[in-house]
Length: 259
Length: 259
Image (cartoon, rainbow over all chains, first blue to last red; front, side):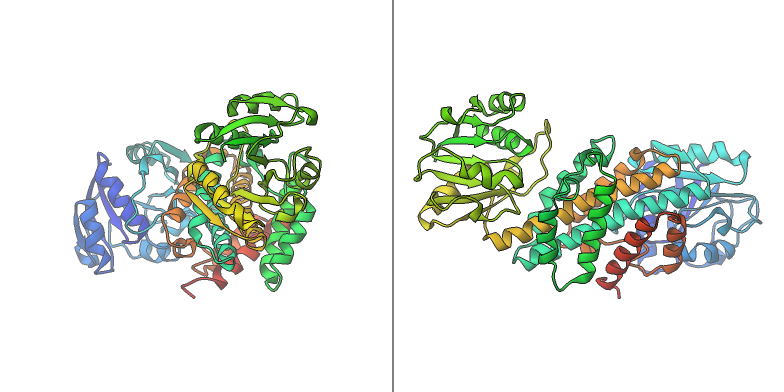
């Protein structure tokens, strides 16, 4: 599976463009509506760009759809390509069935990572979750995935939905905890900057652990209710944050190994 | 301020022992009750250990109390040292006043970081928050702090309480989000291992940003309520997690720049 058409021009399409360019595969075309991003991402992939379905290459080995979760089904259903084409989407929370049944070689290729425009990540470290309804397509799909990443995992749509939910906790919600930390340091006249060494070490420590539960610290895991009461008093006037503080503290203690 | 007595043998005492040993200062003694940890931490500091108050060195330039938040006041009040001694505690959430007034040169030296036994951190990167009730003691305390860290910040007890609360969000609660992520991937038959690249990149991205709000991703910040409903359905049977999921998602959207 050497000749790839990339579809989309967002953060994930950009990361895939860089990754495919470095792999043994060839991006033959980037198909995207956005006339600003399309050419930029195509250049990263080392291929041409088109926004016109009539120009879409019809002989690629794989059509890789990297558009927003909500657009997957619509984009997949309007691709003017032959039914024997292999078509994969890249959305964690979207079932395989979002790709029309008329494509017999339909698949999911979900790289679990947070992607940002202009920010390069090492794709080879990213776990890629694969699914296909066509057993005969498995070896080819897996070979393609392995040319991009060292961590390739087969998972059905139900498993992948859970993986995507786990990513919301470990990434989106963790990032929001940083944001709440920023809000609190700002209320003390300080900058987000002061939290950075702590954030870096917290992540590094968890990644060096067998389980984040083993390295949990803080007043909640010590059941230090005096400190928790003082913290809630500091959040006075912000009932939403008080609620989040109490809920998470309760959860930490409930699942603590020290209990 | 060259001759330091370290008090305590926990995670923070261990980090301070390593840091003082590397600085231009000298640890002259480690005072700690724990007969197993005491000698270990003293060795890291390059000094002798005692658990006997009668043996406590009485001529040090600074007594640095690194015991648990709850023990600070008791330990400080029972130190058999002269009233002219400089005494500092290292607890983020404990006011300066936990050190008895009879010590005129009392202070706080709070390094904001998560410390783990046996895990070395680069102390020079850690923000250290200083406070003293004796203006004459400020230059000496600051010089000591600067010999250990490049980030030295003066903050009163009220500010420091907020800094400590911010650390709970950015460290303790972020780590719990990793733990919840682990719980969810395990329910899909997968290991915590698969989340590590995501956790590392999420922290790195926030640390490279001006504000974590600028790099927030996920269904909540997109107000993608379909995905949120599917996630809540996956958490069926776990009302505590559903509540946390809803609360945090609501907060993310409420504070979103895309709104």
